[in-house]
Amino acid sequence: MADLHRWEELPREQLNPLTERRMITGGDLMIAHIYFKKGAVVPKHEHHNEQLTYVLDGWLRFRLGENGEETVDVRSGEVLCIPRNLPHGAEAMEDTLDVDVFNPPRQDWLDGTDAYLRQPA
Image 1 (tube, rainbow, N blue to C red):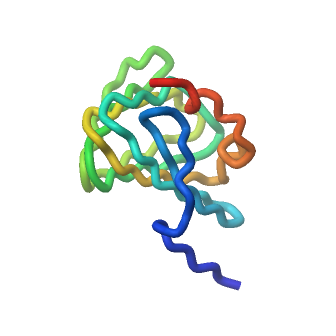
Image 2 (cartoon, rainbow, N blue to C red):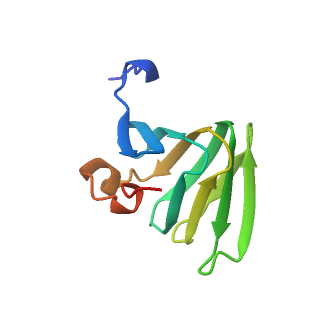
């Protein structure tokens, strides 16, 4: 059976003062809207999930690699493909609406153990 979702009807989860999200999970995929205020920081982390990050509006600066040796700016209309187990973090260079897609779904997001996102920016 297919499920229809409307973003505006989903509750926004406040992760920290500068970051909120909405999520939809299927069997093998997860999609999320992430709302960043300028200056929001996603600390360096890694996960076994493949990730697509699509910036709908705004600008995120990613630091990729164990020591953040690669910097990639992702702006409106751009998609960054992050392979499994690649250390990465990001900073919102301006207010940003980002769509993240994960395979498989992020269990830490579902059960609230994603402490790295829940700290003040």
